[in-house]
Length: 82
Image (cartoon, rainbow, N blue to C red):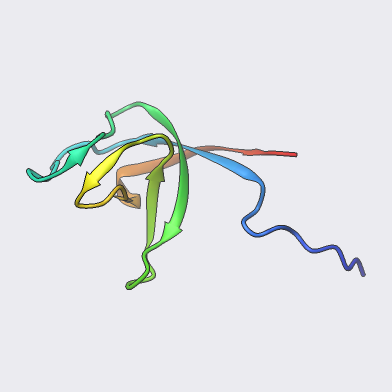
């Protein structure tokens, strides 16, 4: 049995395609995804609810928050980094 431990988080880059860019909140300040575009993402848990959310890397968002529901995206690839 190996005693090698994997780093946390795992060294991989995820990519996802936006499938739902509708219902942009009126008070949203920042970047918004475009349907059909593929973005580099990170999946993170919401601090209070524990629900997975999508964070698009490189997006700027001021308000309300720079996270999107995972139902707005479909995963397309995972690239292992080393």
